[in-house]
Image (cartoon, rainbow, N blue to C red; front, side):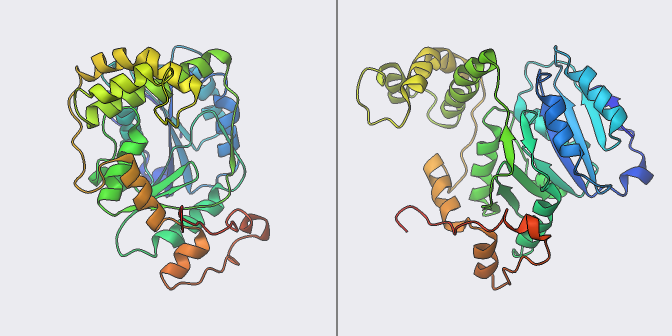
Length: 324
């Protein structure tokens, strides 16, 4: 049964109904009324009784909640949790709330409210179970825009710190613990085109301001080179991989990002995987397609357990590391 909860209300789960749930798709929403109905419908239409969809709304001010309540009346698998606004709570902690409220043994992450999904979620889950069984420990599997792990494992390992760029930060720490698996398959979701205002917000806020704040919190507190580079890379050839648009955005937000980072606590670095390049190197050593991972662990890569139309999702060229 769907329910709307305040942040401070205890979860009153129906144990009989909840016992059938094995997988919880955990979704966070904030002011995505323009895309949320199409996005969630594409997910809910393909699920069975083993799944629930937990949507945590972070005090939206648009019509998101109204739309979500309407969807919950149509789809019993949808549960809505409404939070009160807390400006100290960032996306990482909102994602943690969704995991804590989940009823399933397994949690599916990073399905966002501007994604439209092809009808392969159940098949992906079946494949990820087989991938996970290759390991002698619980692992977090990152597929294409689709994270998968046991709920108990995630809760015991964090999972997110209260920050933006929360997904990469978690991957960094999981790679350091050698419990991160990157799994390749064909993309089965389409990102809806945002409005002009949302595109501008994403360029300046999501892709640049938040990333710079994170870099300054996890790296040196005062990073003269990073600040200098952001202020001058649009004028000088720093051999930057950034586009001109992103260089201009970084130049515009680097000083505010520095000021905000000075008000935030430090984020301790992991012991071994300490840079984005370390994460890339780890991922490239351990990632693979279904066939690669199964063969690496001495198991059959046969996909005949899937319907014929779903096998092409996983029948992709083998991953080859750069220079490999």
